[in-house]
Image 1 (cartoon, one colour):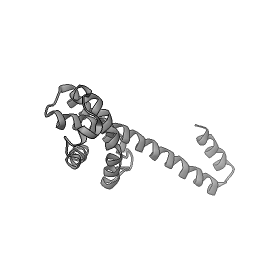
Image 2 (tube, rainbow, N blue to C red; image 1 turned 90 degrees about the vertical axis):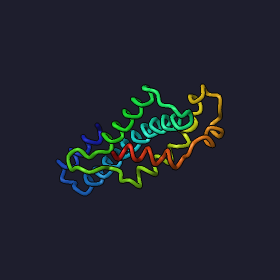
Image 3 (cartoon, rainbow, N blue to C red; image 1 turned 30 degrees about the horizontal axis):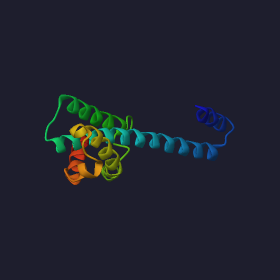
Image 4 (cartoon, rainbow, N blue to C red; image 1 turned 135 degrees about the vertical axis):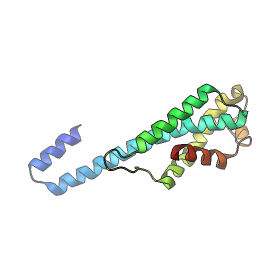
Length: 140
């Protein structure tokens, strides 16, 4: 909020170049926040896809959580006024790839009642297929 007050003061003082620098900083902060949210929901999405593939079953709870994660990713990524998206497909893939190891560790705590370590669970699932499914769900 203090950044907006500073922006107002710079504009009132006619310091347009300084105001534009602050606008750039605000845009960067906003995008960073969106990336963090997409990453968090990406982890949740991947956890459920990993468990689903490993256990060869789908619970209603996992399905609803998956749908919610996809909805929140799309809501966060959607540009409201100008249309389009903040992150393109390549950037979404990158975020999902970075989130996968974290999701795998968390899925190992839940799948098969936590009997397997993440490394053991990793050999039970097809990482590229899970990442492709996650991206497909997000894009549709």
